[in-house]
Image (tube, rainbow, N blue to C red; front, side, top):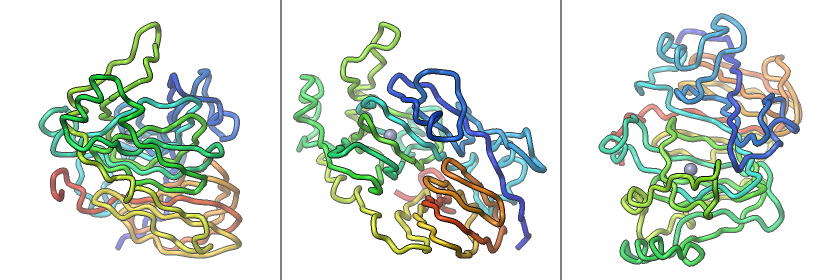
Length: 324
Ligand code: ZN
């Protein structure tokens, strides 16, 4: 295995959203001029926000360029495009109720190679917070009726969440982030979203487009997603890579560091996202809001400090449609 010891540091892309807040610029080391910043795309090669490499050999190039030209830094991944997108979401207000299609549906209906499976780590939330996960309709006809009659309060399922909870959102699951949530999202590299309901809000004087028919096509019925979606990470062992999810597209771990530890980077690549605290990664200073990408073949790394981290990588077998 070649030794690739250069850590890739990316400049985040900040996104203005009608529902966004100010926390990404006041609590994190990110800069943006706009008033409502909803998302920080921290590790992204998506055409709507392709992160630029901040320093080192590839400074000034984008992540999509690096993935295209230097696949050796990403192991044996066969996906045509860099497969993951890691972002932090600051929801000042409720997000629209939405659903994502899977790889098979996008290949048929959209000009995009990936569907969207995503997962959320709750970095912060108000007391008694709830997220929208799944729905109560028992048949597709009932789903259609409730949507067409605007009976969203009867349709959607709300689940209580607290800081440190983790949710895996598979395609076909109705979901919504609610106001006051700060979330780290790890997702397939896709922004195909079907908006089911937007609370009748107006943006620039107009309601945002809804995708009612596509939503009815792709929503899982009946839906029991909430029973598998939610897990609690509070109280997991410190100084250990705790696996939160291992699905067809990515693996995600939580690491609560207290003091120091070392580990091996043996995945196609490894993203380290610092959610809280500060410390060092192989001597490099990192703190809340830092995201590092360690390439294939990086080998052993030393971590020190007091930090909460989410680690993520892509799965090898993520070719669209390869597994269902
Ligand atoms: Zn989503």
